[in-house]
Image 1 (cartoon, rainbow, N blue to C red):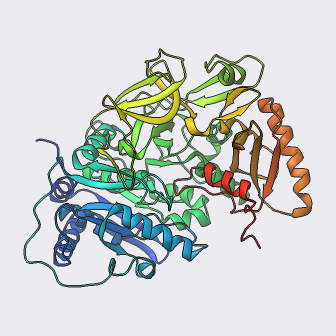
Image 2: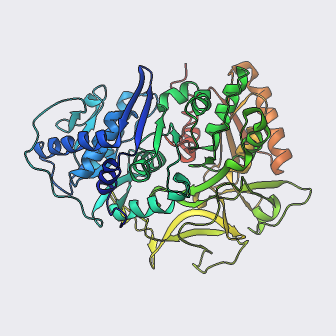
Amino acid sequence: MSSPATIPEALFATAERGAGEYVFHLEEGPVRLSCAELAERASHGARRLAALGVEPGDAVGVLGPNRPEWAVWAFATWIAGAVLVPVQIPLRIRDPAAFREQLHSLVAAGRCRCVLADPELSALLPAGVAVPWDEAGEEASEQSVAPLAEGAAVVQFTSGSTARPKGALLTHAAVMAQVVDVLHSYRYEDGSPRSVLSWTPFFHDLGLFANLVQPAFSGAVVHQLPTECFARDPAEWLRLVERTRAALTVGPSSAFGSALRAAGRRGERPDLSSLEIAYFAAEGVDPAVARRMVESADGFNLDPAALGSTYGLAEAVMAVSYSTAGTGLRFDRVSLEELAGAGVPVHAGDGPARVLASCGPPLMDLRIVDRDGDELTERCVGEIQLRGASLMSGYVGAAAPDPFVDGWLCTGDLGYLAGGELHVTGRVKDIVIATGHNYYPEDFEWAAGRAEGVRPGRCVAFNLRGSEDVVVLVEARDYQAGAARRLEREVKREIVNAVGIRPSDVVVLPPGVVQKTTSGKLRRAEMRQAYASGTLFAGVP
């Protein structure tokens, strides 16, 4: 039997064989949604969209937390032949006016015909666009024309910027190609699916494709912990693994670190023996977090071989490379001096070193190129470029750039291949220059995070524009203005010991000031702007 060509085809095929289920572990109690029920409710939703005037090819936004309604309206959009626009939402809306501005910008850039929204958020959307997602209404008498494989399926925004948001336009064919590429992780050799646990938001590619679309294809049971519940108590992620006996879970390195710390504060050791795949994704792997995961494995009954890492981006649907299941985390310890100076990842001796996690072998055509576009050999750092069936068609949005050169996607990420496996070193635009050498901001950030009293994962390093001055911003776990100077000195000491460079300035901030994307990536450009404009402490009580 041929593989489904579109997302609705995958859902209907899984529903017909009675497989697949979404379990939402909401605060009011668990809510179960089988693929069969999802297919039925989404079909009604598609007719409701048609009655609202949505036609095939129109863009439809979905705004709200991870709830059954989000899943229903996403699949309703695809069944209607429309294009899904997942609309980002922060965990806490600190500034309603700024969030309203961002929503209006995203809705305009996505050209949304309407936005199905959590009723509590509807008022923030542009007039005439919002449709409360629990609102009943008229349905068209006939089903819309089914989408084609080459038809647009998703506009996945890659930036939360209110100025010029850009979205990756993904076809059904691209999404299905990605689903097939990673299917081996979601199914056993006999074809039966692994159970999955996730808390990542549906509007992010990891939540959308790995935990919403993939189960509709693989027939897996996926347990959804609300993102806000994870943020409030990260250890609940680990407890839910124990209760559900999930076999697969994926999340950012910083999230694993937060979960370990939260469990440790209570002296908890949830049983993680059911996990067969526990991968870091969505951000670079902090070697300190990875080390703690390995060292804590026995206490949690976790098999270290289950750990792994990935590299992905919205422009490639989700995953670009993936650790081979059962091999565990693999690291390359390279000389920081050689990496910063010559840009060559030479194995480190006794001097300062950078520890890089392997992201596994590529799932698509991948090459490393120099500034002139010439392909490099193994163990040479350059830009990562991609070619394959799961790549986007292009960007949408005002003045959207064309990132393709001769059919290759220029990612803007730097890395190298070693033994056929990808190692990602950082972003081209985030390079920090000091003493004439090119350092990666992670070198400073991970060192700063080792200082006692600093919140790991909440450190940002950057150059001031036009200079080689290195500035490091850190959040304190327990911020006290009188103790900030002591913490500054400790951070500088850790950075000098690890990197050999003394920062020009270290600023200690209260919790919640360092900005991150919804997937956990640091917003370095925004933090540099806040530092330069003197607004770092704006709004801080």
